[in-house]
Every structure is written in structure tokens, then in C-alpha cells.
Amino acid sequence: AQSVTQPDIHITVSEGASLELRCNYSYGATPYLFWYVQSPGQGLQLLLKYFSGDTLVQGIKGFEAEFKRSQSSFNLRKPSVHWSDAAEYFCAVAPDTGRRALTFGSGTRLQVQP
Amino acid sequence: GAVVSQHPSRVICKSGTSVKIECRSLDFQATTMFWYRQFPKKSLMLMATSNEGSKATYEQGVEKDKFLINHASLTLSTLTVTSAHPEDSSFYICSARDIGNRGTDTQYFGPGTRLTVL
Image 1 (tube, rainbow over the protein chains, first blue to last red):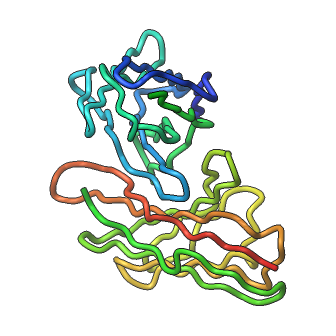
Image 2: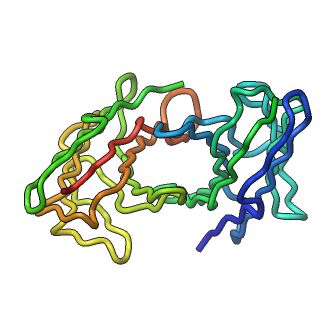
């Protein structure tokens, strides 16, 4: 079975600073990898996904993520954080076969200081 | 991206009553939808997989008779919480799997339903 670890429960950055959110996964083959963002009381919005090909993936809102097979990681980055980026971020993994049910990490709450 | 709606967004009910939550894929057909439950400040836990035209697949520990799932069409899945109790209070989120012509295979999420059982 697959699993996802987001080691940082809570991160605070200053507006304009760079951001990196960590995600490590466990899966026997190459999984499908996702980052979602959730604003308070809202559902999840897909930021980006990796299925295959280029290991550096560009997403919406200026986010990118890099798949590193050797490290079983899929870290999310943004060069300059905006106050509106404050939210909960979830990394998720799905198997490359079958019904593709998602397994989520525990989430990282991002706070942005002015 | 694709759009998934949920209705209602918020519901308050008395203990012992049943509540139905609808999940619709608005601009694509979804043979597979998923239902998640999210506790405060926690991650999403998969409850069940809703399959169009067949029985739902429930995750271990989820009571089938309590959480009834029906996937009657390619754009609609419903979750009915039967004989609700206060411990069923939670944020329920659905997602719909878009396989589609774009060659992607992605789940799109509804905005969630906040259920409060008094």
C-alpha cells in the first residue's frame, strides 16, 4: 500500500520569500503524484500533478514541484509567496493502476507574514 | 480544470435523522467518484469508491449500512448518512475521476459539505 509523509505540520514564511513544502511517498512502482491546496472551509484545488516525463512540473499560481525518484520525494516550491497563498497544502499519491484512489499526506499549514 | 459541485454545502440535522449529500461532475462524465471525510485540522480519509452502475467499494472500518452510496448516473453520486449521530459530524468531500479525452487521469474535488448532527 502507498503512503505519503509531509514532515512539516506548520510553516510560516514572509511575503515575498521563497517556499518549499516537503513530501515523501512510499510506493512500489512509479506513482501518480499530486499537490492540492485547501483554503479554510473549502474543498481541494489541484495545483499540479506528475504522471511521467519531465520531472519538474509547473502548476497554477506560480507553483512547481520536482519528482525525485532516488529520494522518493515530490517537493512543492514557489519562488515568491503571496499573502493569498496562506492555506493547507496536501500531497497525495495514487497507484498507476486500478481505481487510482488517492492517499493523502497529513498536510502542511502555510502561514504568510506581511 | 473540471468542475465538481456538492449540495448542500452545510447541513444541520437532529440525531437519528438521515442526510443525503449530492456530488455532481458538471462538465465531464465520471464512472468513478470518491467520498472522503475530513476531521478538523486533519487530512482526508477515503471512505468509499462510488462506481457508476455497480455497488460502492468501502474502505476498512466504514459502515456500509450507515453511509449509503448510490451512483445512478455518470455525473451524480449521492452519500446518505443514515440515522446520523453527533459523532458523524464532519466535513464530507467528494471527488470525481476525470479520465477524459485530454489524456489525463485526475480527481477533481467538490467544495465539501459540513454536516453537524445535534
